[in-house]
Image 1: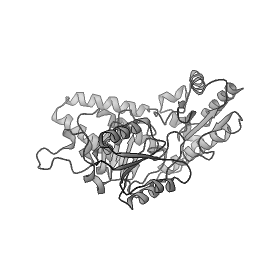
Image 2: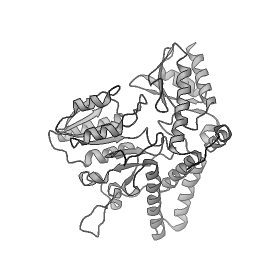
Image 3: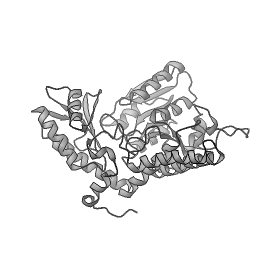
Image 4: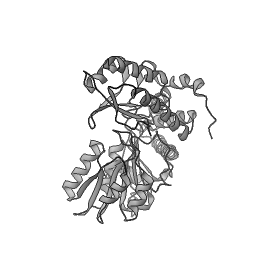
Length: 385
């Protein structure tokens, strides 16, 4: 167990690990996290290590495979799974595509997707519908989401696609309960975990998750270009590899696929990024465990929400009692949301706009600061006055 940390003592020192935070107020962790200097150094050192050993030497090849194993193991702790069940991918969308296209779709199968999915995943589902004549319907998120899903499940529903945390409102969907509901009629559940990994405590094995696609470059504050996919060993034989390459096969055996999550991996990757992601995870764990980090996120997002609600010109889109670090709001101003985000960025305050719903999103991480919140609220007050 990690010891209790006095945030007042460690906060400035911990933030000092992140070069990007030295001159800005940053609220875009849901889009891309900030890299620590430790992660940057680990990536550079890994590239140098490969050059010193000789690229594509036996020693270097052994070393990069070892890096992949260590990275799966480090991520497994975060997700609450066996590292052998993880596949290393580029990002969430790749992971979702592996799972989507790996299922044995038949004409007339039904797929149920939430109304709050990222356009990349929606586009993949639409192409699946076009190629395989799969029937697709949409369930509404919000209150009573479990009942909404149950009403739309059909005997031929092969898959439900949903996000664990909705990227446009911050709502957490009840994943364990949804899994139990769907599994009763042999329906699988694929989860876009872009906003959950690194933000909330996870226990995927305990929740009997089927597919869980995530990235390292958002809330884990790792490098872009490296993520992962968890496929439950219980259904591994149902999800065939979408892409095929030397990392996923056993060419000397009669049965080609690797026996674990490696079967969904393809070929050469930017292996030094794995050292950077592990450095990010190591730094995160010096702050505290997943539950203490999540509680700090909730404290900060509640602080911002409370302050925004004091302005009659600002309407919260996310829950006034946030369940995550995503705070979404609309501003009644002479400026559009895009113009507000631009003017904030000119003051070194970084937020983003969302299209659906039309709003501004600010993301609070466990090492965000009260002074950043103060700068954001003060700047907004000027813009709406």
